Image (tube, rainbow, N blue to C red; front, side):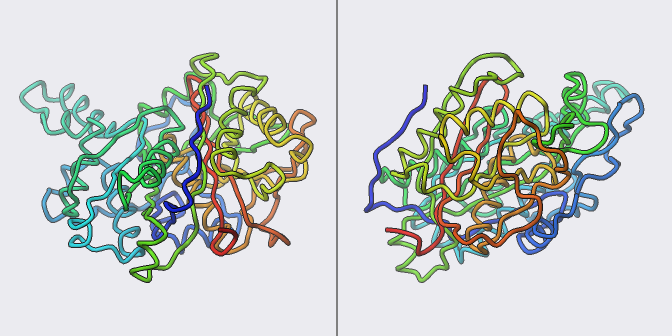
Length: 415
C-alpha cells in the first residue's frame, strides 16, 4: 500500500553534495559528461570468468584503484566498500561538510544495497575451497555483512551515529534517500548522508543469468526488441540538509527533494505485476507527498531495465499515475549506459535526475530504435535541452514488488 506524508514547508530538504561511481568512472564530472554524450559503459567482464554464461558484458568499472583508507587495510576491504569510499568522499567534499561539522550535527545515515560485501564472501569461499578452513580469512566473512561497509565508512570519515542499511531489492537506494528525506523533514535530523551501492560479482551475475534476465547483446529499455538487462556496479551518495541550514552556511544547492512514495504489489518473486497499478501508487504517493500535480512533471528517469516484463509494467504504471500526459512527458533510462546497479540504481539514477535539473539537460535512453506499442512513451533518444525542466521523478522497482519513487525539483523552481 502506498504511503505519503504531508509537506512541511519549514523543513525543506535540499541536496548540497553528490558523489557518484559507475562504469563511466569515478566522480560527477566524468559521469555526467559521458551520460550526456550517450556513451555506453557496458564492456567485457574481467572481474571473473564468464565461460559458461550466455552474456559476457556488464557495466564494470574497468580500473578501480584501492581507496586510500587510513584506518583499515585496503586489501582487506570489499570492492563495494571502495566504491562507497569514493562516492562518499566526493559528496562530502562537494557539500563543504567537515568531520567537525558532522560531530556538531550528527547526520542521519542510510545506505541501500542488495549484495553488501558479496565479493568478500566469494573470496572466503574460494580460499576455503582451495586451502581449507585454516587458509580462509574470517575477516572476509565479516566484510561480507552489509552493515560493515557503512560502519567502516563512518569510522574512516569520523561520522558519528548509527547507520540504517536497507536491503529492499532494487528499490534499496531510492528507499534510503526517501527515509533520509523523511527524517530531515520530520525534524529527526538536520543533515543526512544517503544513497546506495553494489559491486559486480559472480554471485549476482549468475543469479540474473539463471533467471534468463540478461541481454546477450544490448540493453534496450522500452525498445520493441529489448531482450534483457545489463548488470552494472557503482555507488551514489547524496548529502541532504534543511534549506535553512544550507543557506546559513552558504552552501551550493544542487536541487531539492520534495516527495517520496513507496508501495509493494507482492505479485511475484521476480516479475512485476503487468497491470502496474500498485507501482503507480508509489508514483502517485510521491506526487501527493510533494504537493505536485501530474501536469507539473517534466521528466521521468525510469527504472527501465530493458526486460520485456519490466518496461511494459512501468509504462502501465506511468499511464495510471500521469494519465493523459504519460505519452508527452520525457522518459529515459540511464541503465542503458551504465547497467543495472541493483541497490545502487535508485541512488545513482536519483543523482542523474538531480544533475538533469541542474544542467537543464535530459539524459538519453541509448539503443532505442524501434518503438513498442506496449510502451507508448516519449523516449529521449539523445541529450535534449527542453523548454521546461522544473520537476522530475525517478522510479525504482525491485524484485518482490518493491516500488519507490522520488520527486526532485530544480533550484529556484518553486517555494
